[in-house]
Length: 59
Length: 341
Image 1 (cartoon, rainbow over the protein chains, first blue to last red):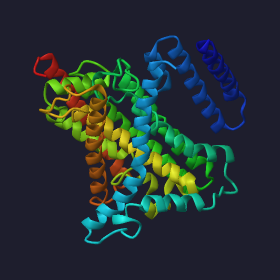
Image 2: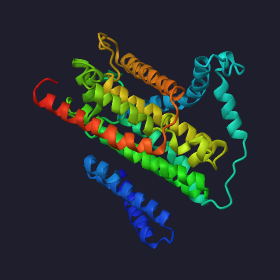
Image 3: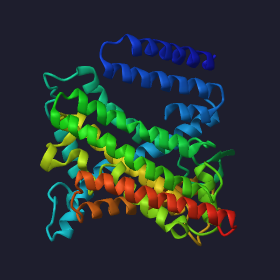
Image 4: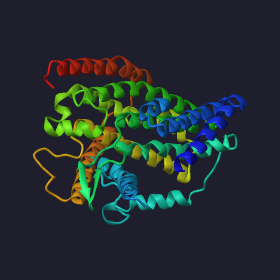
């Protein structure tokens, strides 16, 4: 149950911030939401049990 | 509540408690130590030996007015100081402070996250610190802040390269990315400061640049940039940058101690006879003692060397430190292949 909740939160965060990247008028906000997208994807990799990919995703 | 959760919370609590104590102690030491070096007394009015100076400063920070410049980007301006604390309060999770012990019938490794990619977690979380500086400089709507943050990001990216290369050198002999394995390797043989002196030197210099300490404090060079990226910050928001900087120094020093000075272990001393809890506290005490000496060295250097010029900084980073780190890399690899290390 915890896993599904974490997945739901971070999958939603990844999708929303990915939309913000292309939709926002201010490039600085776009960059920051790109960072949020990458971090959320990293969390998804952790959930899938591959910490190595998660770390590479952050960098 | 499972025993595992309690163990993780206890270990995290120990680190966070220690890290939060660092800022006031360093604040005091940073004024007292150079005062004695310069034949003066330094702050000695607040409490015995001036030890309560940190509390006086905290009270002052809390009661100051919290201002936001009129042209600032409000959201990012408020976010930046909080981001400054993220790397400082997350990177410690992979630093070991003892062996695997048994506490209250429960076997646990004395590290918050015993990960096989430990050092990568440390480096990638530490690299997130750049965002806080860039956002602080950009959102302040102030040209000094912006120049300071651009300098900071260029400097951190340049020196991260040399730093990471020396870290790789330090991992090769142990053959693992788990920092516990690096400590175990040094317990069986020599400290790596002896076997990799060149790598240690490059790591040390790069650590100064990564934490924006003199002689590499170009991002906040007072004489040219007022205060760099945190020019427009006051009150507790400035204090958060301040604490973030000292905590980053502490975690980076702890990484250096783990890679080059045997981490939580002491030569010729064996803790394994004690109970698990005592081993944990002893290990933590040893690593904090070594980190404390390292932090004193940071202060000592700050009051000894003048600031570099910007082109000298880039010259040193790219044309001196990086080649030296690569020399150490080839040398270490050759020694390991040759069976010496």
